[in-house]
Image (cartoon, rainbow, N blue to C red; front, side):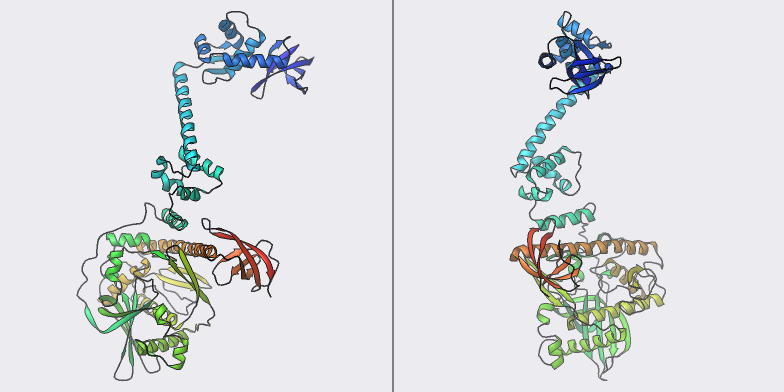
Length: 610
């Protein structure tokens, strides 16, 4: 005797070896023996053998018309054997009954299972909806297959073009487009951005990183504004002219200097800060742009300015232009001690925009040591140099030197990276005078009880605060960023407060004002995110440089554990298997597998060099 039974959602046939009340021992056609429950048996039969029985039943089931079976049922619950008898018009053979059962079981849209071997026909409206869904799914699978083939041929489907940004940066993983893209990437062993690049939908890995940052950082995209500030108020004209000192790529020139010899042997030094707060008032469209951006975003070879280009051009301290500024004048004696200060709002002629790359050839440690050289503004720069040294000594924070910065120059898709010692005369002049004005203006605001945003540092922890407090790293009692109002929103806010103080007007923000608190909080978050993005783009260009120059075997310095810094680059890599070596040890490593999409490079240890 043989049985046809249900097991694990399917049907099987086997020969009975032992028949107990609640269970049976059976042997499958391939010889496997097992124990089954009596309740799982659908049919008992003598012939044909189980293997032939299953072949006949499955073949007959394939020929059955499931729609006709559904029409044969009257909507009431039924046993499969009863429907088989009605369908065939005679007492069905075991194989015919099994065929009907297999067909019913495999058509859940047509027949609902109601118990062991019992079913009920689906209502007509349910069946139509299910069939429509099945057809829709079939068409979707065909569409998905076409999209996958297109992507594998490096062709971007037309339907993907309006969805490109979402698919790249914020995909709906339940969408058909994402499922097709994901499967195509899996088959091609490509990341999503690489797949889009292969289809011509991404111009470069550089563009991808910038687009991703903008998309993740600015909901709705970068803010825009075509409004220009109103004309500046009437301002007094400064008697001196000024000059700025900046990197060659700087367009937002915030600060400039003037130096005038006085009849009594003293000097009058002016520190002049661009004054966009004269026209960019709280709540105006330009202010909303700046409030959204909060800072200029820097990266090698590019930047996203806090203010629109038109506003930058209006207020930047450009050569040959009389610009509105907030000026702090210092009277210094022959020993370069400050003997008097005062601040004014005025307009000043910018005589020159000096640039690091040309100025450093003349204004450097060597030329200052020999007092040699003949270059524009030599006397004025020398005065600023001596003043900067005095200011640094007064803070008790003398620069010990030795630190290296790296200058990235990007032209098209090529990059050059060169080390630049930190603490050059140019650096010292600019940084010391900016520290001075930020310290003094912060003191004046605090003394008059005018609200401002301060930067503090205690026990090595730097933070923003609405209360003045010491910045231990700089060695000053308070520090209110005010010197870069074209590039930082905090500076723009503080300049508004400073303008009110100098003009004897009511300050736009009260002490502890909620808007000050919100601006401070949002600025901190944005500033940290922008700094992280700048570091990631510097790493990107380092990786690009490795590929561009074909670097393979290089020297590196051990930082800690398995981390090393590649010599000549600000590129830190992890070296699997690096032996335990003291910090600073020089090793030789091999670079390979450069990846500019997820910026990194494989680094393999070769040998220690010291």
